[in-house]
Length: 370
Image 1 (tube, rainbow, N blue to C red):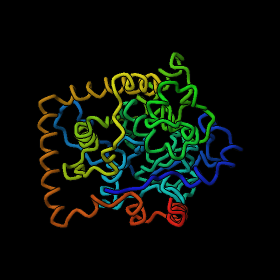
Image 2 (cartoon, rainbow, N blue to C red; image 1 turned 45 degrees about the vertical axis):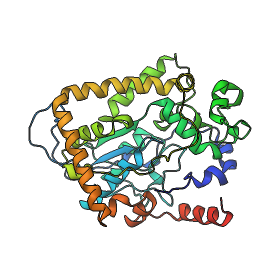
Image 3 (spheres, rainbow, N blue to C red; image 1 turned 30 degrees about the horizontal axis):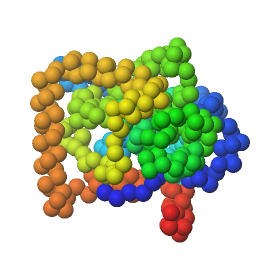
């Protein structure tokens, strides 16, 4: 499916404002003044039974979900799943005001939500943001499920470098045919942590989670942050094991199989640029060591969850998911499944999001043929 580079409007047009605010990875999050007026629904849905241990107990489908949509991690595919579920059950989404992200790369604040009023409650939050737990927590009921997706940091860096490179000025001085390899030979020569959009090119997962992506990898803060993520998120999915992740998610949310069927959206097309070699893979991992520590921790915890779920049971459910996906693709070839193929921007507008800033930027980009 064809798609164009999607970056926040102010990323290109508001550099002056970013300079005034300081480097985004060093900015300090602040709480919305109405912090005391947190979401307080009159009636909570029954607490779901966590069935990840393989028990067959009854549970209620979970409808309050916070999805931290990380970059270049198959997150658009999961977003489509959440859009479909929310639309089916007429749930209330917290949408950005005027655009398709919450003023990324600045920290999330409740005031960025479309039609926000103090005390407002939402069922699902799922658009790109730089995570700010206290602000997000105040928008959803106490029993909301928090999830996110991680990806091998070297592969994520490769994808981010090629995708976001055109809007990261520090890459413009790379002159070789393989800019990625040239950068990784001596990244400190090119990288400026305070450079415009530099956050896309180092420890992007750590940045999206709201932490300083320039921390010393040996700092005790790194492990403290990782353990904080573990406390806050009920499930951390892995892009490389997406089907297994969806099985765990379906179990955690007490959803049906049809709720997690999917098409891959925004998948990178075959590129003439070679994938990272063994040496370059090692360099990319070392350059993104904060993300590497994060990924290793949650890769280990992910497989502990699979063990608790049951290896044989997991194999059966993954097979069932893939079989159902193949059947669904056959149906879609005959003209069905429109919602599964609806791009993010169109789906947001269909659900009632006001994307005037995003649409304005598209108009400008089309006019400039960029």
